[in-house]
Image (cartoon, rainbow, N blue to C red; front, side, top):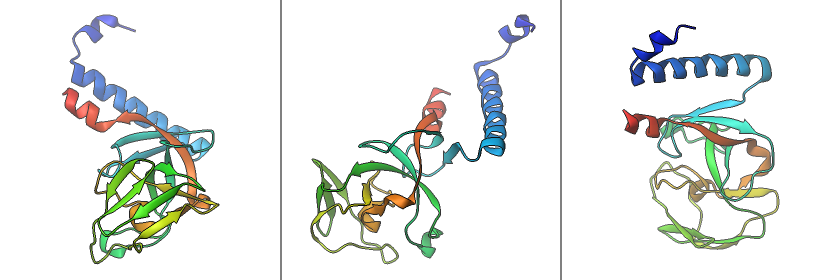
Length: 171
């Protein structure tokens, strides 16, 4: 390899080459091994590329979850894959009010829009066979609206591999 050429490349060119190489690797891996890379382009979770990893989902882990319901007004179909963060497990309790969901010392705002499903106000225990998924951004479509999501809807545990926002802030 001619290292003299690398000296003349800008940081942006090197980063672009790395992104293209990563994209080629992702395509190849997904073709031969099934989906192991997932992308998130919405603000509901960190935007970027996620890598499927082995193991059970635990508190704070991200997972690829199949949407438990369709919401046509925002182009979500039942079964669409979403990136969600595990916040509560069977036996944990949470409280719903008209404006928030509180669980494990954290509070998540709830918005009432005509097309979003709602949960009645009250105190609940996360049932066996389900997980409460709550993302940090206030605009996330998650258990605030769906309620606990069946564990059968979990497709993969994932970790953030490439954070698009961090890359964008670098340049």
